Length: 320
Image (tube, rainbow, N blue to C red; front, side):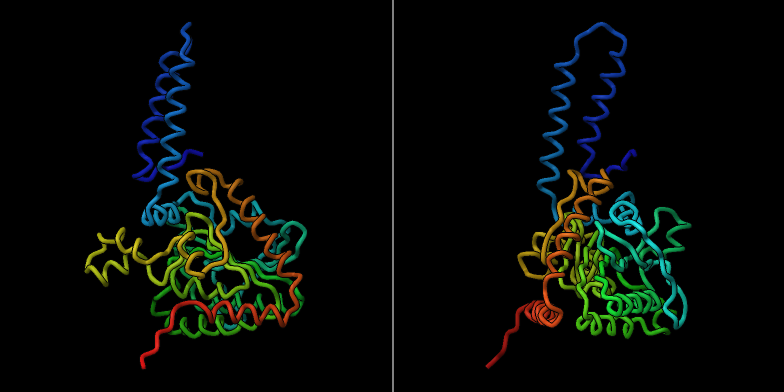
């Protein structure tokens, strides 16, 4: 799969093209070009490491949004088995932007829920660009309650720019649907593991993210507002999105330090879009390790720890 490069990846692409041109030009000629080829290959590797080990917050946001990055159903196909999708919220209808169902991961039966984007216009219209409607959150809660009833753990994969803000969603009470999920997930009597696999936008992400373990892929982001939205409010122009991304502290490493998430899942060099299977293997290991650890904790203790985790987030200042 040929990956579409981002702007900051162009130096790598230029070197790769140069290497291809040398190989093509000298093909069939009886010349020893191995030293030259090796030299360029080493430079490509060095450039790649220099770029990806020093990414800015905005560059990670760009990677999180990459159209070729693996989405929810990609991870389901690569990391889970026996997936059976379940539909509908039993109140209004089904939401294709929030697929969910029964699955198995490394022998552990579970309920898996996630947000799904599209890679072309037709699929994005079907998936509503990964922005769920109220019925998506109500379907997710229906399946969580089913998981609780049958003593199955819940795995949620978060990838949304935010819940859908349209008129129809407001008419069907999108804020209430998310608020109920926050409340009910806090007291759900079964282990819950969430992974931010791409974009983690505001309440749309949190609506399936109140969990015992909240993990993030290395190049995902998790924030109360998008960098562009923040820039429009504070700087009055979206061009300041890179500065906003730095100020929001929305990257995985920063959020671990702040205590907002519990761990970071590494990605293949260059991002998950460069190697879907390797990214899925890393996600699978992290999820399975978390599920096995949580399965040893008594339910009442699990709920107590979950409550305390979220209560201790942030800083409270009281004036005398």
